[in-house]
Amino acid sequence: MTSKNKPPFISWPRLIKSFRYASEGIRHTWANEQNFRIHSILGALVITVGWLINVTVVEQALLILVIGGVLGLELINTALERSVDMMTSEYRLEAKIIKDVAAGAVMVFSITAVLVGITIFLPRIISFFAQ
Ligand SMILES: Nc1ncnc2c1ncn2[C@@H]1O[C@H](COP(=O)(O)OP(=O)(O)OP(=O)(O)O)[C@@H](O)[C@H]1O
Image 1 (cartoon, rainbow, N blue to C red):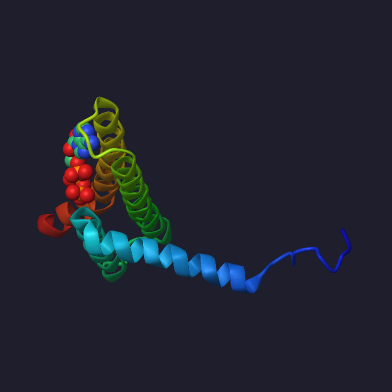
Image 2 (image 1 turned 180 degrees about the horizontal axis):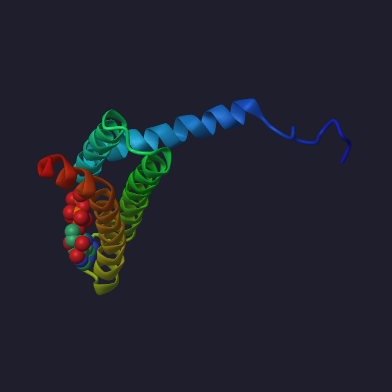
């Protein structure tokens, strides 16, 4: 193969296209999944409150990380649900297990995010009311 046929190291049109497809996936999940909307709105609220009450940079980074993690897992959960629905419309134990385990992954990480939030906000709430 000549260097003329070699694909570019970075292809900007391909990169832009992949951003577009990823945005379409996020838009689809926003439009169809109530949990994703709830988590997105709560996440934005938590980050805003953290910024307003001046949590430390590390705490804010942790909040962003766990909220992003929950939203990322929601997207993977939606992809798995759609894959299962594409494979079967009948009741199948395997389908149930795949969907329930994926939902369980979202729940585990959501609980983790809530615990991180409590660890960061609770001491401040307590010291606010103790004043
Ligand atoms: N094909 C199937 N076979 C067996 N059980 C299924 C099947 N499809 C769904 N289920 C069960 O029903 C539950 C809900 O499935 P569903 O696809 O409605 O997901 P959901 O969590 O309600 O997502 P959505 O937000 O898309 O409605 C699953 O967690 C699973 O226990």
